[in-house]
Image (cartoon, rainbow, N blue to C red; front, side, top):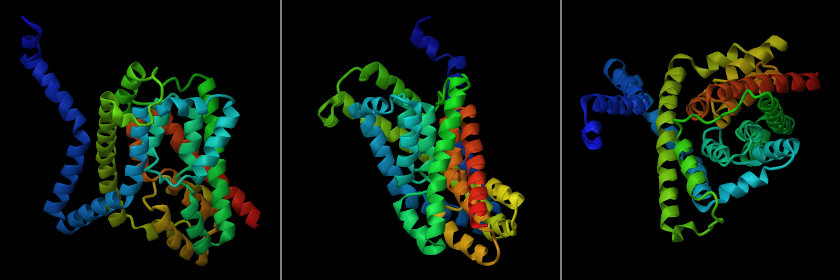
Length: 352
């Protein structure tokens, strides 16, 4: 029997259909939840659709910008220069990544494509982790808004917390790398894996072509990277926003945050723990947390809640899970939790 005939055999066909269904599982799960809500709880179903649409539109500009940068780096070969820029002393790389991350304008979701590009280009996981953790916590516009709502003291503390979180995460990740615990970071099924492998095999040894659109193969790579990364992010973020809508409906943010009132180490730890999966984005959380501070919420607990939520909100955590292997994901969550707790503890001690 020829190869073409063998490929169309029932077993091969069922295997192909099974793999295709597995690839579409996230889409199917999101659709099933929305359909069930529309049938049994129509009002919540419509609210879920509205939240998903508004969230995707709201984060769209940042996502598109980061995806374009990622696709451009791959198509032009600039990712090789990026990897070389991160060569050298691990301590210097981690410090620079944390500082740049704290100044970058990307949210916790928008930074995902850049992280995938950095990992695919061969940048050490320790430096990427430092950038990854610091970037969503603070940016120039967030600094000004935080200063206006919470005061300059809190804004400076949150900025230092972002840098410190990046340094802590980068340092611990470097130690884990040295111990051989992080031999591989990206999942084989992530959108970056195929693109990065073809990049290394094909264009990796070629010089950087800043005007990549003049070459057909590079144009194809740009389009493929852009489309695959866009579909990958929309797929996972849609599921995340569907789950987020259910959390908003049945676990109101005010109720969660009010349980964090009071002072003490336990309250700060609980604030960090609740903040890790928190669905509130930094801009929406500021006025809420400010109001709770006026009602008695400790400054350290407020900082821990905001830092943890910024570094690893539910949509970002789901996207990270889809991108990297479990050890890296667990390290990412652990560092967000530990770093936010330490930041809150230090800030509360300074206020005292």
